[in-house]
Image 1 (cartoon, rainbow, N blue to C red):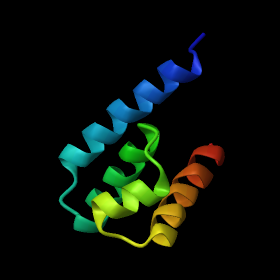
Image 2 (cartoon, helix red, strand yellow):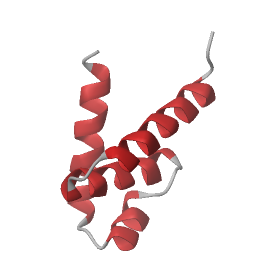
Image 3 (tube, rainbow, N blue to C red):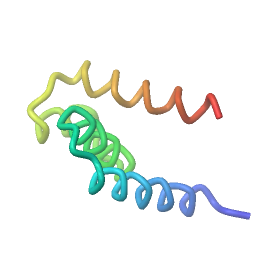
Length: 71
């Protein structure tokens, strides 16, 4: 049985693989946002790092969470 921490680590590994393999700039940005979120950065901090609006960060995270929950 995996702990939540193990699941997070696996998600991070999968996102890093996807990040390396994508040539789509939009997806590259989204993957980076989710990686920072999984590393427990705040939405405000991620927005500052990525030079994006905090509402955009929240939307990316919500979209990602909804896709995870649909499986």
